[in-house]
Length: 168
Ligand code: S3P
Image 1 (cartoon, rainbow, N blue to C red):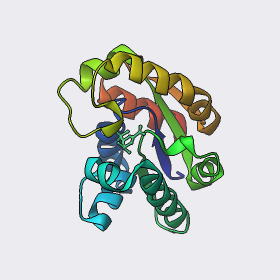
Image 2 (image 1 turned 90 degrees about the vertical axis):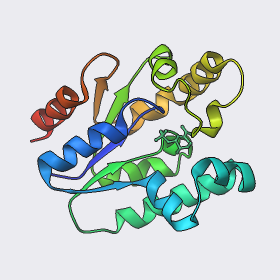
Image 3 (image 1 turned 30 degrees about the vertical axis):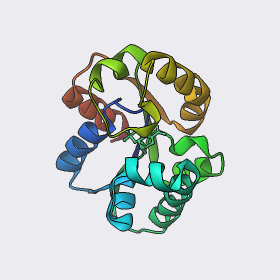
Image 4 (image 1 turned 135 degrees about the horizontal axis):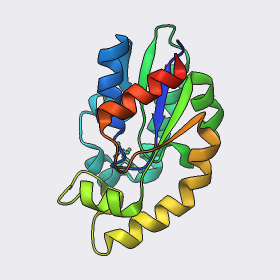
């Protein structure tokens, strides 16, 4: 089986599903956000705050390029905005089979209630923020994806099983 790359909006379940996929496949799990935090030695919210989104996007694109060079079998969990740079799309697609976990804005709001780790969703009127960002990104998620899974109501376990059923 090829590498599996998970894309989708914040709160769609990429982290949870990717861990299940790792356990089921024994592929190595890599998470672009975690790599960036480990390297920079600080949280993503702090990177955004101190150096700006542009700087973060540069790191994200660099990590993606590096992952493309790895030979081992991978489950790749990506940051929700990785598709915003058009030049990332061919890299994402080349990395493996791409699964888009699609959720509704209301699902994101419910799941990320009280979350303080997503700088793009801080402040007032979260629903408007999520809806605007999601609308702006939808076409890019779809363009990247080999498979689209509606991830609002299904359990992470059933989503992971569905992905493996389709890809195996
Ligand atoms: C972002 C999503 C986050 C993280 C950063 C920016 C985005 O990752 O990369 O806060 O632009 O959607 P998750 O999708 O894992 O929350």
